[in-house]
Image 1 (cartoon, one colour):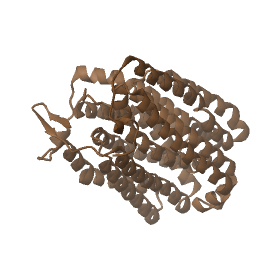
Image 2 (cartoon, rainbow, N blue to C red; image 1 turned 180 degrees about the vertical axis):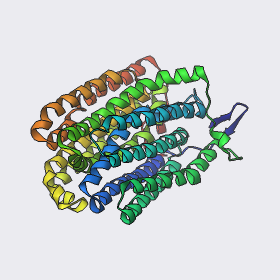
Image 3 (cartoon, rainbow, N blue to C red; image 1 turned 90 degrees about the horizontal axis):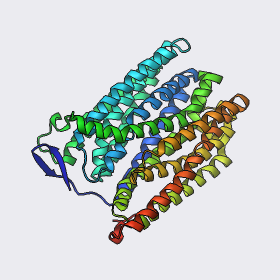
Length: 447
C-alpha cells in the first residue's frame, strides 16, 4: 500500500491487519479508554462535591458539543478515502482551522454563560476545550492509521491516553481538591502521550525514516481545501445535530434544574459515553471494509457485514438493559454515592438510549461508506426537532427522567429511515455492477 508523504516520493507503508484483529484491538482499547473516562467521573463524584461534578459536566456539555461539530467526522472521510483523493496534509490543515474555530466558539460560550455561572465553572469549560483541541489533532493521526488499517497502534495510543490522563486527573484532585488543577494535569498527560507515542506512530505508518515534524506539514491547497470542505461541512452539520441530540437534554437539565442536577445526570448518562466509545471502535474497524465492498459493487457482502454489526449491537444493548433493570440501585450506589440511587428510572432509560445509539451509529457509518452524506442532514434535523420537543414537554413534568426518555426516543426516526436507505442503496449497486470480490471480503470477520 503506497502512502504519499511528500510531493516527490511515495514510501511503502506497513501491511494492513485483518478486520478481526483490527476489531479486537479497537474494541479492547476503547473499552479501556471508556472505562478510564467513566472512572474519572466516578473519582470526581467520590472525592469532589456535587457542585464540582456539575462544573465539569458543564464543560463537557458545551466543549463536547462544539468540538464534535468542528471535527466534522473528518476521520471517517479520511479512513474511507480508498483512492487517496486527499493527502494527510490536506486533512491536517482542515483540522487546524476547525480546531481554532472550536476554541473560539468555546470562548464565546463562556461569555454567554458568564452571568449565570461561576468563574471556576467557566475556567473548567475552557480547560476541557483545550483538552478537546489536543484530542482533535490526535484524531487526524488516528485517521492516517485507520486508513492503513493499523488499529493496533490506535488502540495502544488510546490506552496510554486513558491511563495517563485519568491518573493525572485523579492524583491532582486528591492532592489539591481542585478540578481546574486536575484538568491541567489531564492536558499535560495528553501532550506527553502525543509527543512520545502518537507522532512516532504517524512517522511509522508513513514509512518516514527522518522523524521530524515536517512529515506532518499542513497543505494549504485551496482547490483541494474547497473540495474537502464540500464533503466535510455537511458532515459537520450532521455532527452538530448528533451533538445536539445527545446534549439537548443536558442543556435543558442545566436550565431547568441547575448545575448540581446536571452533574448527576451527566454522571449517570456516562454509560452512553462509554457505550459510544465501544461502538465507535467497531464502526471504525468496519468502515474501510464497508467502503471497499460498496466500491466493488458487492451489495450482498455489504449487507452481510452490516447485519453482523446490528446483531452484535442488539446482543450487547439487550444485556445492558436487563442488567440495569435488575441492578440499577446497586450500580448507582457503588459507582457514585447513595444519593444517586434515587435515579434508577433515569438509568433504565439511559440503557434503552444506549441500544438506540448503537443502531444509529452503525447506520451513520454505513451511509458514509456508501457516500450517502448529504441526506443525513435533514434526517438528523428531524431527530433534533424530536429531541427538542420531547425535552420541552417531558422535562418540566418528569425532570431528569424526561431528559432520559428524550435521549432514548429521539433517534428512532433516524434508525428507521437510515435502514431503508441503506437497503435501497446496496440493492441498486447490485443491479448496476457485475463486480465480484473474494470470499474474504464478503463480510467475513476473519483474516
